[in-house]
Image 1 (cartoon, rainbow, N blue to C red):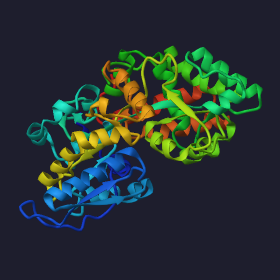
Image 2: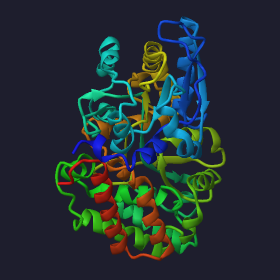
Image 3: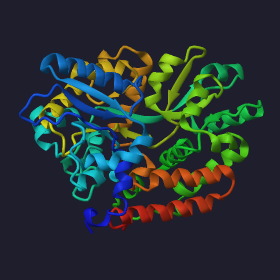
Image 4: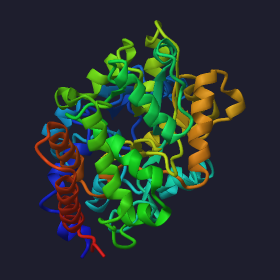
Length: 435
């Protein structure tokens, strides 16, 4: 079944999760030079990629005389208003969109995103964005990523790292772990000293990301392909899945993660780590720029959870051109500025992970280490994406299950059973046969 036929019931929800809600006021046509292009985005303003986009905008305006009108919106606005704008004449010229089957994939099959193939050829973007980085920007006719049509272009990458407060480790005479056993041992030593080691929120995605990192630690390529690309059955009885949920439950029982996580959101845990309240915090690299700027009271280091086969993450959110954009050629030209050597190298020094930079130009030591670590996984195809990419309903369903685990209202087996059910339902609703 084609996704266009099977997706009516979830289309509005999916678009609300991926589209930025705002009105573009410019109604000029493509053959008229506009005063500005409207660009919807939702990154933090001090994030490396946002700084890079603004740098590109300055160069773009200097050459073309056209200003980029940045319009930052919240996810609440997205959920309430996103769907109506993409399918209207008020759609922006350029937009940041989430990637994945349930996000950009859905939008592409509904005819709401421009096929960027001609621009890719014109500017040679496929020479800059390749392999695993290109996979999230291309979709097939059913909206499954790693397809043959470019519907977006990524300009940065992101992945999950474990951030360590080196001062707290030194205070309690605990070694920064380099093996998984050392990681578990360090957590236990902190608990024995009366310190909750791991900052994690359960109201949003923190516990889910920890779980998926445990999955990714032991996963193989067959498991990832089956989960994300539906190339075979997901083995729901595998140790990769059953042990990872049990481990999260054990960490809760042992006090590695506080049961108070149920009342915390991502910003709560991020701020707590910045203030030096936790020794360990697994979070996305989008926060590294904040850590560089805001952490002044202690030293820190970071790496993917030790001994992981896969890193959780992928190339970053996409720059897409809505089908109803009034200025597609200029929007594509701006994307080319974002992928320029100058902007990409700047991004690497601003705490982001560029997809087309000269790493020899990255002078910040922590940024360079992060980029090199990402590249070490990406070049070998060892990125597991995120668990909710398989279907749009999982973005809410999976965190909800782990919140119940944190609350103690569900057992690990029940959590996994319900994720299984929601996964099957979500994939079925997407119109893709679950083999």
